[in-house]
Length: 81
Image (cartoon, rainbow, N blue to C red; front, side, top):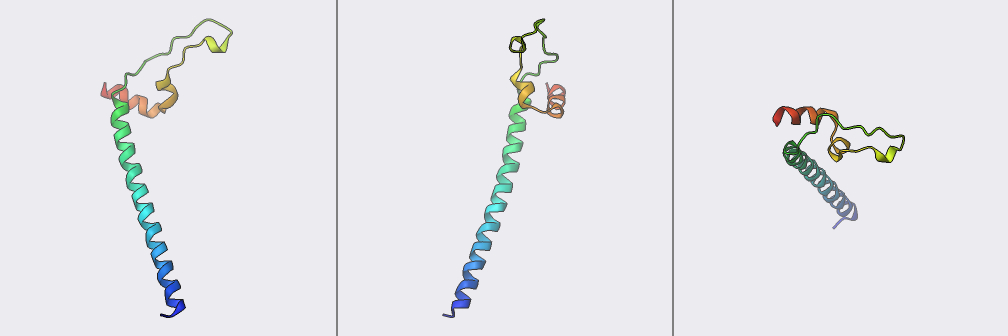
């Protein structure tokens, strides 16, 4: 076979593989976001964090839910619960 044709075929196979992987990554990301938002909607939402009267920043209580979820997600969760 012609070496240029072999290079062209190899390039097309690489491009096709790359396109396939990009599409698969997009679909997996969309599915993961959908499933994670379903899971996150089941978590309890704490309305107001309790403040500790202390100068020590490590004495404050921190909710992992508030740290991990953005504000828009918390509003949606409070409507769902």
